[in-house]
Image 1: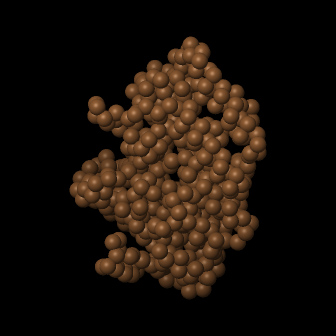
Image 2: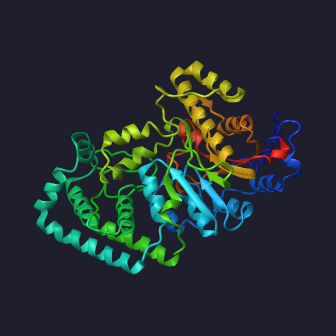
Image 3: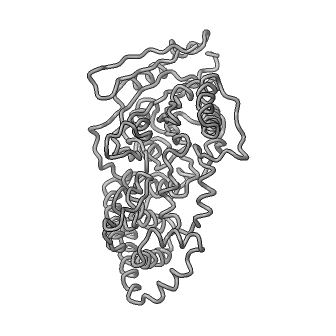
Length: 462
């Protein structure tokens, strides 16, 4: 049975909510395990970090939607691990957890399947020779500017770069002059021999496209994964791509100079969180943030704006998107048996919208496999921290926090506590409206997050 204790402060803007899950009789991890006590104490603290600095070094190399603040990862890493221990993020995203783990003297490991996330993470953890990097930056910028004086070569390369579907996408979202400038930059970057430097420059290239509101494309709000064009007469002003690139890359170089701490490229690897390439009981802490259900935050919708320039056709990216956790594709999918609460929520949703019910069933099936892998790779008496958001689908709260807690319990990975943190919309880069529309489904589901603390019991506790 699960017992809930709720404390609510009527004076705060967002309720202060603490939920303690008491595990099945006979299990004593709450009473005797110091990690459980420490974890529950951390979850009871203020996890909002609203006064933390916005400028967070390498974490600002590139815009990324819904990334949690580095301070959140840091507090669990510093309190639940010792130097040299292994910290894992199986859904690495922008590599916040991995960077913080390495900075704290731990071994950080992250896996993801999103191409832009992998590029981002590798760049953030790879040490670079600053003198060589600055020399290559100057060469790339100068070479791109010179090549624009011989436009015919650039235009020919642009004409042959994209397949028909990708070209249609690029022509809609990028002005022709911008396309020429981006092509000039890409050709210059491709001349760089050092792979690590080339990746650093590619990430800077991507960051002038995928931005919150500016950027060189014709889209607004890419950082929030809600790209749109304004009505005629309110188009974005043209931004020259090469000066924007130079500005961004020099800013990132300055960050490296101030904060040279780094790991190694293999800290970030391609890997599926539902089937991790790790040995059993090999990890000391997991801190991660799974996607929302039903593509509520559609990473690929924004990422493809730069990935098409980095050589990935639109059709390929669309197919890749369907493999992401939280996707709405439900054909040819292996569903998992689920505990009572997820089944109840899915049944409620299915009565209103059968397909949406299947989408939610997919999400909880995926998350059951992820939690199963977390349970497998964690050492006994070690913790996993998941930052999750709940969705409202057809007016029904998916109760993501409680459902995942129950799934964890079914996998012998008890949830010992849940904390709640209110969201700073812009800093968390959530796709919410700038207006307080209480009738908006997005508004209803993205003002707070839950921080779940799971603990793998000692063998003697079972």
